[in-house]
Length: 206
Image (tube, rainbow, N blue to C red):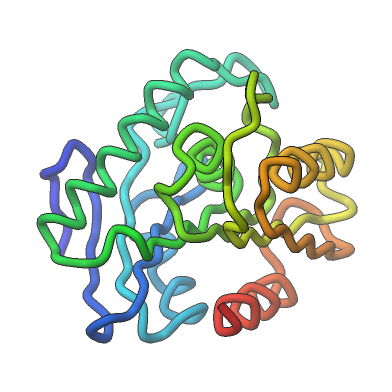
């Protein structure tokens, strides 16, 4: 069922009691339905919490504004990241899942705000799968991530996300104490079956 409360239009699908919750964060132009099948494939027993980005670029939902390709509106990124962190807590109260066991699965724009959540709100996520993420911003002071597990997947031929930017993000997270795994595929910005398999194996091992 789609729910418009808690400040984000979203879907919540209950999983097995005691299972973790996957926070599903779509890419530009997606919505709260886009990643539900992926979430169920990645971790079949999980609760699924899938919000729709609140910002429109034309008619395309996003999680925060950008000024151009790869150029983010950092003030809006900050505001939307804080709102998403608050949404996780409110949703946990409403649906009764453990807010300390939420793992983000984000693609592209969704992966970028998931990375921003890790950097701005350490402890809000128990882990993250960042599918084709860019470095959202460079924190003035590295957060304390205390071994938070993070999987970053990226394409060697991705024209939207340069390899150096991916490696920069991985380095920032590692220097903040995250336990980072980096999976490269030979393709571009699209999500490949090899990435999905790698993410499912990584999640099942947590």
